[in-house]
Image (cartoon, rainbow, N blue to C red; front, side):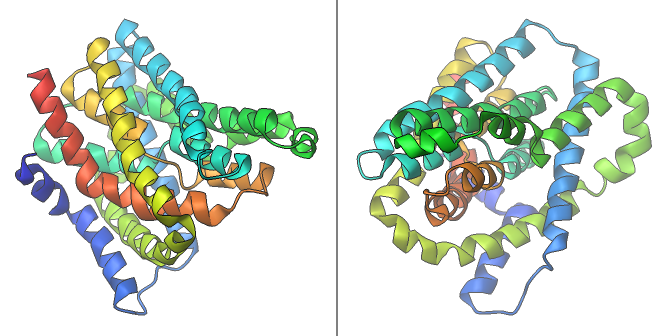
Length: 323
């Protein structure tokens, strides 16, 4: 792999901020970001990326390529939990396997945003409609994960699942709602809306992303100890499954004719794992699953792996096969 891509990614200010956050924990610094602020940063980033995607979508419109991309994204979100569930059942019970499988079928919006920053730094174009794919990949994984629990879990769990609550959590959780809402806002207002909000959604974006990844570094490093509960099997899973999912994503992207930038974002969506929306849903509906397993693998292993090594590695593969 071209190490210059890795260096370019690591020497990006938001990624360096992530390392600074991890270093603060390892060196026992008292650095912390007060609890309400990371939530505000998260909401801002989701709104900004959704709004920008909507503006871009208003320019390009919805054509066959857009429809195929969104369909492929939702299909991957539904299929990944199925085959990862059976891999995880080698070592885990049905509840933990389903929770982790749903986590890896869903996506990390921050990994996606970091990938867009990387593409911008590399001067590679990408389309705003990829945000629609991002928004629509959260819900199918949650629903499939709960179906797996219903089919392979105990009889008691089958009776306890309230599907109206599951659907509500899957489609109306804050990240999906804000992404879709801001996407629609961008579509409706177009260039005029972008001119009005660009000082907010554009000029502040990378500063907020930098502080958010600083906080993510603090949180990820604090979860390192939880990996002792996960064991070597889950640590290997948290690295190898994203690589496999990214490879499948790249095959799909190539087969439906995605451009390089969009292909990278699609592979990143396939390779990432949720540490916000899905854990919230699993805690509510599958209390038998151990949160330290599905949160620590997604946040302390897969997230750092993707933003440090995965993103440049996936682009390197694209450079080989697309050219």
